[in-house]
Length: 79
Image (cartoon, rainbow, N blue to C red; front, side, top):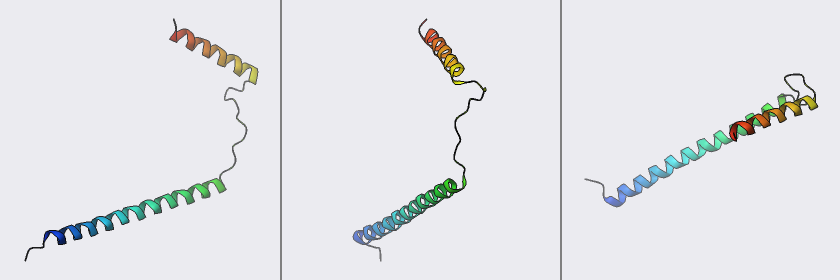
């Protein structure tokens, strides 16, 4: 005997809810694992030190270079 339309719809709805539940649980587990990894990494990684220039320049030299680069960009964009 062939299943009726309401039986097919009910079994389809059950399958949909089971599938959506599995996906929801997997995503919740993934969020939890990422959160635990974040906490673990924050616990064992050192705090970043003060920012240092890779060129070994002092602040006035860095400011002067930034101004020159800014002027060059302005000149390039607005000939």
